[in-house]
Length: 101
Length: 229
Image: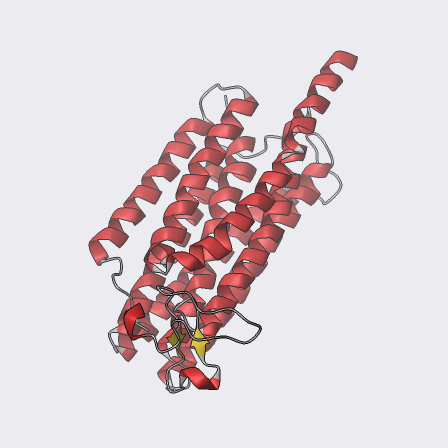
């Protein structure tokens, strides 16, 4: 199977150092005094960025035919978005509990 | 392969319709288009199979991660048991897993270049990273168990912490352990010329996925429950 282009070693190691850097950012962020919801959103955002780098470069999806990406990713993202519907309820529960106490 | 050379372009297909001009349909190596050996995504079928498995497994992990996130945000007295030593341990585990992913990329690269010895070496290095990850993780588990954490009780707060922690990290550790066994089998088979570079690449997809899942578990489980101050 031919690929029109692949990630070279320079790109792979750049991605590795990028991922390590983002991990250090996450650890530093964990020790900042931020509200739980803000911390959760920031950490998950950084994790999404790391996941995108892994899928694109390590798993090579960036260099495959676009049809593979179109088949796999939008449907998965749709499932994830459906799951996020429940999250508003989690913060509502915490709020209601504080009102009772 | 250019679409202009595609012998199926514009040809009627079963069930009506035509393959549109510009759409590339790759033949399976060693077969003709007419034997049904077309590759619509331009990748071998077992690689497509692994991608489909990964998407389905990602949905499983997503459900577990969402359930954990829900509990974490909703519980007022969620424990924060992870001292700096545990955070350092989990950070080292992350570095080990990321480095093993790069070793896996190098294994795939070596196999594409036909370097059999290099491929086996990098595959063993990747599996070694997985083993180190498992050892560090089991050490973390034993530490928590020693402090009194059980699936439905712990000394600090909401009893759900133990079951949520052990379920999520346990499911991931199971994937890492299966990955290590998978990589060792592929390394042995590739060394004996029983599998091809495609199989090395497919095993790499699985390993990178295991790495990817940890990128969510690490901040969600450890960093959001770090003992601060």
